[in-house]
Image 1 (cartoon, rainbow, N blue to C red):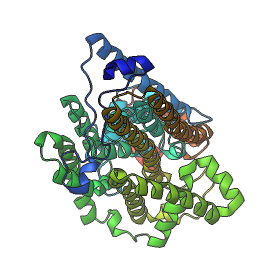
Image 2 (tube, rainbow, N blue to C red):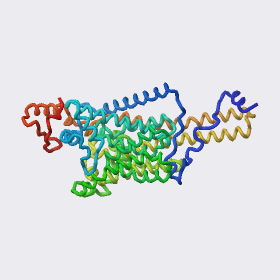
Image 3 (tube, one colour):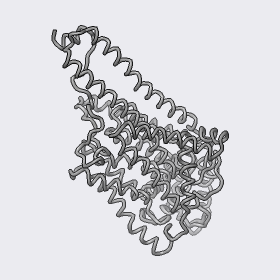
Image 4 (cartoon, rainbow, N blue to C red):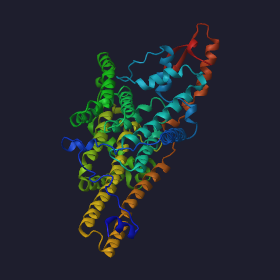
Length: 504
């Protein structure tokens, strides 16, 4: 009886080769850093109608993600409000100085929010709030889709990559202050940039999108310079010039920040001129506002009500230590990613809260108030990414082990003992349930948190951001103005706006 005939007798088929025989192998690597930049599995060529269907599915996914983001703000809808600097900084300066995009705020450049504001002034004033909210939601959903593609090297299971992409849109701390706004968009780009720097796209389109993400992120938020170690590792490991398009995008954004950072430092408006925060406060922020909240915003408050802030933090930190420790011990090839993700989240949180000390020193934290919650978005997302990548790696590891065992068995016995073979197949079926259980448990835990945290009141919910009365007041003032200008109070100080650029 031949090997194929033996398969036909049992009614079971086994692949000649698994998708990954060695999940932890180094791809073109130089040392252990090679595992940070794995190549994604080759995608088979598809017919034109299949490609069109795939493109439509991705557009629909982004649209659904944007709708979910818009629905996460309770009370007054986010599209009827303008949040923070979108109102008193970007919009007013766009009206005063059209297409002057390079204006320093807080010691650095915010290119993307300023560009969104420039386009907003061509809309009727009453519709400007919808522009900022929808653009912010679309950018967040687009980042989720980008993460889905860029994580293909580390997560081979597309359902788990979809879960990781959903984690961008369903971030537990997003409703507090970054959802549905132009000023909050760069914080979602943080999440995309991390994966962009790990990605090795196979197509020019992928390279172009990764480059755009890197440039948009670094030109809008100066703290992205902290990705420099990851960029250096990429340069050391990957030697083909085509694989450094994302590196060029990151570098271009950083270079764009240099004049703004230097000018603000010289004129005394830089954050580096201020009193820096204390390390103890930044440590406390990382553990109380990031590690504790990683289990979910509302779940963390319930645990805190039982065990207290320090006790709840210790419980969650211990659970995370067990999870990360188990991955480090059992998944050798996954160690570089886990260490990189944990260190990246820690360094970003510590650095940001040190240079913005008021958020770490703010004494009041409530379920509807957390100063600096934007600095916990990336670390929390990376903790979720570690769990998802760990489960995917474990599934691949088991499949590879089962394949090697089945291959050795086929070579040694050549299917001559059909009874023993059937027992082996039954054993593989039983053990194959374990990865399914792990995946189901992971998704159940994440979904429980996402459902509980889908909508809650935060800074973004404040009715003071209602745009309709502000727009009506500006329009009415322009009707009465004889000089063609109006003086409004925005952001706590008076600003002069030209009525000629205010569209009704």
